[in-house]
Amino acid sequence: MPKITYITPDGERHAVDVPMGYTVMEGAINNDIAGIVAECGGACACATCHSYIDNSWLDKMPPIDDMEDSMLDAAYERKKNSRLTCQIEVTDEMDGLIIHVADNDL
Image 1: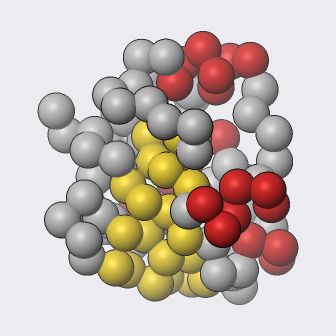
Image 2: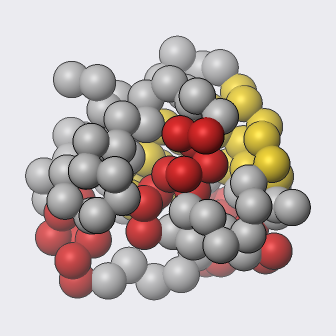
């Protein structure tokens, strides 16, 4: 099972196992990671699962699609490494992924 490290806005690190086929958002919700609000439940309709992909992982991520890109325009403090965690399905290749949770509680 891939291990994903979530770093919350306050700097806390949480390394958790996330089953393949789940989304990075589901991994956060199932492990009570603060900051991943996921108001829409993963429908790519709210941007409250917005996070930043660690720079060391940017080239390894699946490409962003138009719907996610459009929804990220509504996210607070969008950056070049911004992604919606509800749109990233966990695979074996993501073992060790580092996610910096955005401040989604605004």
